[in-house]
Image 1 (cartoon, rainbow, N blue to C red):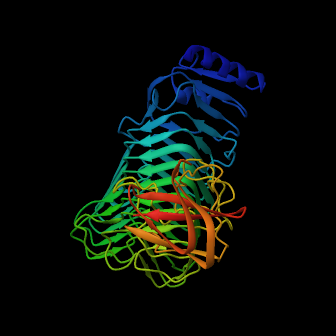
Image 2 (spheres, rainbow, N blue to C red; image 1 turned 135 degrees about the vertical axis):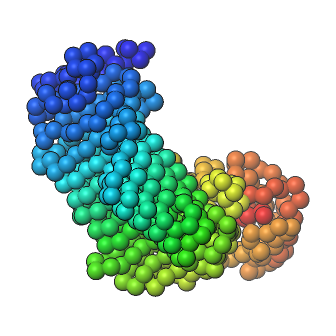
Image 3 (tube, helix red, strand yellow; image 1 turned 180 degrees about the vertical axis):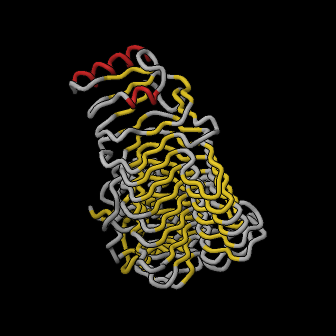
Length: 497
């Protein structure tokens, strides 16, 4: 089947263009030889295998470098003697230049200052799709920038990819174990995992997952998770994301389980750190989950989820900032931060905000459980129509979206009616019992309890003004109370904790 697919893939490319198709290794033994032979519009097709050696991209427009397989079976290795691929000041290279389907690994740089162990980009904007940047290393005497990816003055695009387990070692300054952005431009990441990268520095540990200074960045449906620092540095800032002097946009993003190590003097923004220097820094967070970012000894971090500085402007909507072990503040610092329809530990004033445990599925799974108070608690205004896993948002259609990056599925056909004031239910959530209260005496009311699968689990025929609902056999989770009287039906959501 794979051979058939490969043949069809080649035919489709050939039929869509009169450009050359350069085959590796059938016609060219190395990827570099095939690229060096390219003219504008050519495609290089690479069969599965491991291809060793540094690649220096030519200054030719619209070259496509495609793996016939994918990143699980097609590897470009720097052989631990150089970075893997470099795009250096190439005026002809823009988003029509595409690299797709490769594992990019074993990049290795040593020196006083090192940039980009896996991919080095400067002054141009190639596009990447379905790549895995992993196992690349920088060993810098002074400054180390972006062991996985280095982008300067670039508006590159990264789609459906991973940037994992890259390491920046530095005796002084470590910037970006996974990604470094700088020098202007707007870099876009969509469906990208930036995970388990490391910065080891004896002085400054900044932006282990992603570091940006002077550029702008947009992350959509991305994971920034499990990035960590070394021990005994002086400064730990923004282990998940460090960002200064540009515009940061996060939509359906999780920033979780990024850890700062012990032995330092300054701990700020284990999840996200925003810094205002000479240029303004702005950030927009929509349906973002920031959680479990902390020190390895669970000591205090100033702004465990988010730390801002004077001059920063931040807008947060439909998001969760909840960290059980992050110190006194979840959102700290002196920037101008507006938060609405969000769940924030330690509280944050704003329309629709709540202060309650979001009840994740587990300590390591940050999907919402069926009992979460964050379900249907967001606002439709500006919310994306999908979640981090591309599930429809909101669910069900016509309801309010959930807070955070994940949308929990709800039974189709059940929609909560929240605007009715004739009926109230309190307490809600509840642990043992709750009371339905009507504004007037009722006769012959039918009250049904329906679970999240749409199954009717109890029916009560009632007359009066108050009805007590016992937890009984109901497990923790969300249920719907359907109240019917003389042809009128009201549906209310209840949460059993």
